Length: 106
Image (cartoon, rainbow, N blue to C red; front, side):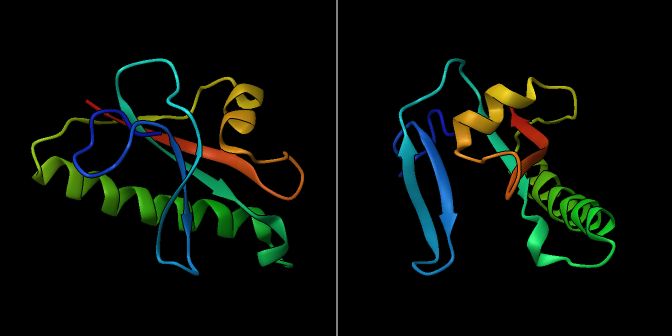
């Protein structure tokens, strides 16, 4: 979810690996901060999937938060959020894809 990011329209975006870029999938959400929503896709990890979800999410968020901090932003990790609302906002169905942690940039 972007808000006030130079070169990116405010709104809800997904990363599309085919075009290697962001694709807007919804209008701007409430609030005034940009938030990275990390989602997990269970079928990618047939064995011990949940371990891999959180390993990958942790690695991604550590790198993201280090880059954000070096750019002078104040990243904040959120693990307590309204699952159904975030799931619906980003277009995850809660079965084939679901939200993991969030990182809010201040």
